[in-house]
Image (cartoon, rainbow, N blue to C red):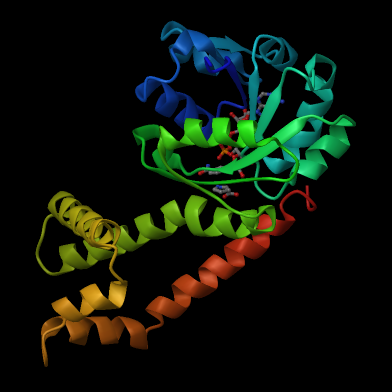
Length: 270
Ligand SMILES: NC(=O)C1=CN([C@@H]2O[C@H](COP(=O)(O)OP(=O)(O)OC[C@H]3O[C@@H](n4cnc5c(N)ncnc54)[C@H](O)[C@@H]3O)[C@@H](O)[C@H]2O)C=CC1
Ligand SMILES: O=C(O)[C@@H]1CCC=N1
């Protein structure tokens, strides 16, 4: 079965990352991807690269089989009103990456029984390294498989229960920012102890990548790997304990909880 053409409504950070990731993975050509944005002039480089760009969401929907909703929660209802006349539940599959909005919220606003799958990728999708969480309530197994196969080409995906999507948003989508800030902090420490900023950043980023790969490739636990680094009376445990005395783990845990709470109210507050 060939993959239906795709329309990405909202060509911002995540919409464009998704488009670029799908093209990089060879799943779609730019010509098979519709990209919309109100200020379509801002998409000029993508038009030149062959993407079908337009400010007309309904037109993009009518040319596609898969419709990705990639706008902010507060922009969603207006967009749904705009595309409602163009949606055919027998033809279209909606994929929503919008945080804090349930499949039921979308069907309810549209007033039709269209199939909706939620996907929570992160911006590493642009380089094929996303962690994408996928959930639905009523979509068919075939459509879930289709969405999973799409996101598997641009990273790793897992299926979760829909009620965990706001938690997934915090841990995986916001998580990119959390880990990047950790790397920046490490590089700033590196500069204080003698490295030029650009060297310190490269050294911190590669060290973080190696640490993550130790877990992913060896399927081991962080503490197992930490035990291998912390020599008795050594400098690692001295630094690590100093970080913990200053609330390192606690700050990350509290930040993730706060993010998840906020993700849960984004749509209701809009
Ligand atoms: N940025 C991220 O890392 C992630 C974001 N998300 C979710 O994806 C959604 C989009 O987030 P971002 O890409 O960060 O936001 P963004 O603000 O970068 O992108 C939204 C885009 O939609 C466009 N837009 C707004 N109304 C429109 C309309 N009626 N028609 C066409 N285009 C319209 C805006 O001009 C903007 O380019 C949000 O709901 C967010 O929660 C999900 C996972 C990761
Ligand atoms: O900050 C946000 O609200 C969005 C959701 C996940 C990543 N960015």
